[in-house]
Amino acid sequence: MIRAIILSATAAALVTLWMDEPAPVKTAVVVPYCIIDFKAAGKDIFGNVVTGWARGYGPCSLQDKFFEI
Image 1: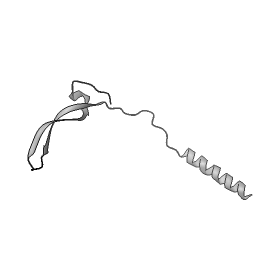
Image 2 (image 1 turned 135 degrees about the vertical axis):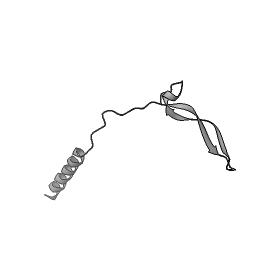
Image 3 (image 1 turned 180 degrees about the vertical axis):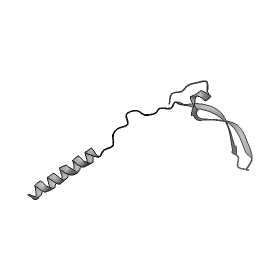
């Protein structure tokens, strides 16, 4: 008798957890980002502002070459 009650409660809990699961995402928004070179600024160890070119990620419209990420 107790075994049947525990089994029923377990089955009910599992069904409840299964029904409460969120729906999967159907489509994801994909934004093509590319490796770009851009002008950057920073401070050196003496506190002086240093400018130069850096490499990072950005919209593909900012470069000539296209890299799929």
